[in-house]
Image 1 (tube, rainbow, N blue to C red):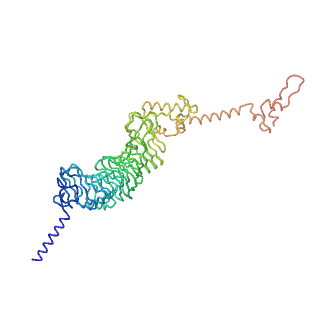
Image 2 (image 1 turned 135 degrees about the vertical axis):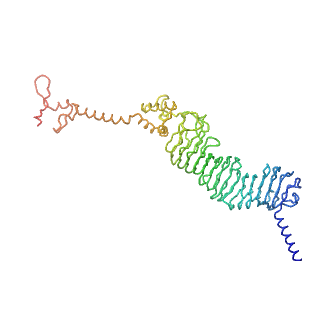
Length: 515
């Protein structure tokens, strides 16, 4: 009997201890204070360690007490729960560990957690941040370990705050969105953001050796800081706008429904049916690509144009165009006969864009040189061949052949008539002025007739020389001296002497005399 009682007592004690370690409790409608760590604010009167349940209450601002380590499995918000706000005490140290399911919200109001002033919140095991808003302020840390995830939560990390996923045992995790001027540490992990479709901006630093960033959802994520993560950047949905620098990334891949935009610096880019939009969201600006740029045929190059300039992309490597489509955002300010630079590639241009530009009402043409792509609305060849020489308005420079001006005028007439020029003609616009003049000269046919004219001129000169009776080389070949013009020769020949009358030149030697 004694042994049985001891066994029963031990079992009850073990059960009590187990219950104490996994206690559920509901936040009261009228709690005595806003302290999470005060037992009398709960029903039953214990601080929950398993599931903390929140419904209707007159106290929705809840404080985690200083010098405490709060461990909770699940924070559950029932239907009808108001918008709860949880915060940490300032400026003392507080630590919260969420170890179970995480944040479960069945209410239309998502909870907000404000973590700062030497406070930490850890999501452990397989817990999730759900759809909460977690604001990490200066001195605060929001960290994910084990196989925890950010779920669909909104993470706002202000200057001096830290967001950290470096200790995950998994390859990475999701987050609804990230924003703020704080530090986002990835380590070697992959962070997928954007599922809550919000448009946010990270002005702080995203860092991590081998860490990668994937943008999803329909919103816009703007990266305006100088980031140092070295893994890939994937734009799988919405828009990634880079106004800062992500060139440390190993490369950017843009998916079919996504857009890479901005005025900052990105790594090498591959567009698989996506959109490259330099200058956006402001419309006019330059995006820098530190590497190669490659379009697929299903990709779009979206540019803004005003009266004097266009948004463009500067590429340090090679630009491969592959027949991608050029689209103009708004053509109402395009200046006719103005040449706009759309793309510059130091390593060279490979291939052409689709010649049919989308989003324009007027006749525009794309043309190329070795390192540039240009656009012009009703661009005139006459302008191109005379624009670099000073001349009186309305008249071509005297150094320009009339035939060349005529050929350029004929091409311009075709342009005015909305005739689609062969690609070879459009590409002439990408040449330098001397090269254009040379090409148009070849179209005149002068380059081919010139050889014949030179041949005829040489023949005529030879015949004139051969048949000229006064030529110095005629008449005394083989006598040892050259014969000059007749008046000079007459002075050296003997003449018949007489007492009167004119002097008569001696007759020319006969052939017998020469022999």
